[in-house]
Image (cartoon, rainbow, N blue to C red; front, top):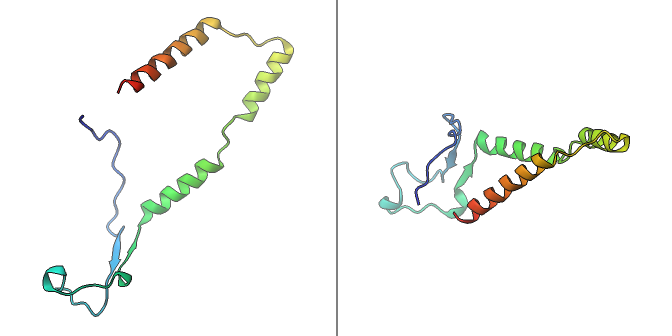
Length: 107
């Protein structure tokens, strides 16, 4: 199965990630130099992308699932006898939905 990247890449700024190391470790020392950095002295800070994702998540969570005004309009139309269902459109949409579900389950 081939996976293609279809979305736009996230914007990258110059200083989005940083790592703090043990000040006692020399810049040339690494795992190859024999120096070991204690696990508790390393920290990672996420940049603005993480904060943007948290903001987006909270705004989506607070967004209403139902358009109350639209529901009120439909209720009023039903009460007034003005609401008409176009059976052909409903049937077409139902068939399209079933086709989508079948093709998704075959993947």
